[in-house]
Length: 434
Image 1 (cartoon, rainbow, N blue to C red):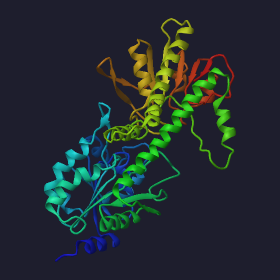
Image 2: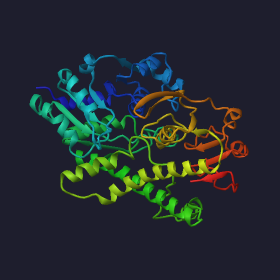
Image 3: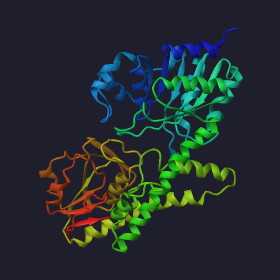
């Protein structure tokens, strides 16, 4: 009888494995690159044909990954159009989106792909879920089929290893970010550990899959709660004529017990607006209450709506006939093109629906499809050019990309509405800091 554990362990340790990454988005593609750099064949699966078309030209589909990084490892990236080759892979990593649908967890991307690839699953494979999800869902999705057709932890292996990708972060990469791993049982856990030791310096082994799943939610619930706190304090201290940024700087000198969070127009990205809701939904299933978490989600949403209301008031106070308005930045954070759950998009959408003459400048995107009054409208970004920008009557700094020349923008004497604290040290009547 084959010792599938030993066979797979030897393959991993000798780096003679084929790794499948299903979903080569912000998480999956960085993962694929990390393995490819170790001269490991990575089978890349994604339904986005345009992304694969760019990759086939040996070019990067992401602003923070260079074309050279693709070219250097391209021969190890196997771009696949169907799942037929899954049985050639020794480990299968799911890096698919897990959004919300009607306020509830939507695991349909994972469930859908899993149902498609089951016929290609063979003995000796390690299946790893990286997608953020709620405790218990990894086993709920994968175990019924695996238990029926295999002997778990003997000839098939199941693990969960939550992603910790921070798009555009130049300080922390796969290599120097500790990687949490877990497994259905000991063999799965050890194989998962061996796999990720190829690309990371430090492995953190959770006791079981549910703890690993919950750890990911906690990481982002923590951020959501603290961002909500600072957003609420920003609104309150504005009324008190206290600069919260100065307060944060002073408090930040404490070497223990304090972590710096900054206010903004609202939360964005896949994690912070979504993960707390995953836990809140799960807690209700157990008849438990997560009032603190629910409140933080409510405050962060309120912050965006509060800003929209304030922007409208500032615009109307200027008494400019049909003012031309420009929103700087559409992504959810600076220096990347990621627009998932972006507060900037919500602000633009609401102002557009209120019939304001507004455009946007996003250096990392050529255009964006907005849902305006239940109609999809494609609007092109204006190219970043200072002469063009200062022709607008009102400029809203919503996503503070470093590409923008703020000193020159502030000297333009346009009406500036600053949502990111870029102009906080400038005391001019034409600049409004929210």
